[in-house]
Length: 346
Image (cartoon, rainbow, N blue to C red; front, side, top):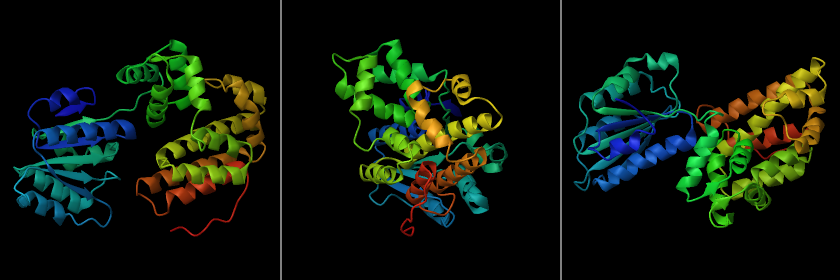
């Protein structure tokens, strides 16, 4: 049975299904859906947990063995099967179908998948997950731009905060669709809001009081051509435990903007007019930084860097070779207009 993220909490209050699938490309919502399932499982006695990361070298016999064996401590188990690329291959498909035919009685299986493409959705194993009565398939959809302000208001309310419409719009403009970034902003606002009221001044203060190595500060340093400073900020973000998807989202967003502006400028559109035509328009205070960055590369180069961001995304998801942090460093330096010698990838 297919469920939306909003329907999942109600279902988890009933008898748990033998198998749950969480599928989508919105990291925060997928993580929270999985956390909700784990919490419900623990509450109902699934105290033992086994995690299987199904990469290219995964031995699918491990899933067979887990389904066939008894719990080591005679307790109920939560089995987590993570398939980062959404393509288990022939052996994996066979193992999933076999498990669906005979789910382990003392176990709950949680399968994590990205958003499945059209071809994969037509595969036998995917159709079985959609249709099997013992499966709850949670499809996680992204929050689009029109829905984002309402999502932010709900998130603020869950944190015990109320916000003015202008404050909500300012948060939405800053995060531009990245829910992980939005959640981080709201956590900061919980510390800064007086009487649980969030105003424009509160949001601006949160920006000013951000950690020393802020993602948005990294962007500004790169746009300004401050390559060495940007590299130090990236290292600081890594040291503070920043997530690579959040940093990549910010860099890729800026690259898409730069590629669009560069293309329009190459076609003879004055830069100020190009800034004003964007929706939402580029803020006045950011225009000089973007204009400075646009002097470094032609449109083709910005598009090339955007393809480089796609490669880093594949590295983060385990779908391509390479170390994402090194890729982020090279991408940051390229935006700044410099190439620095980096140490070999680990």
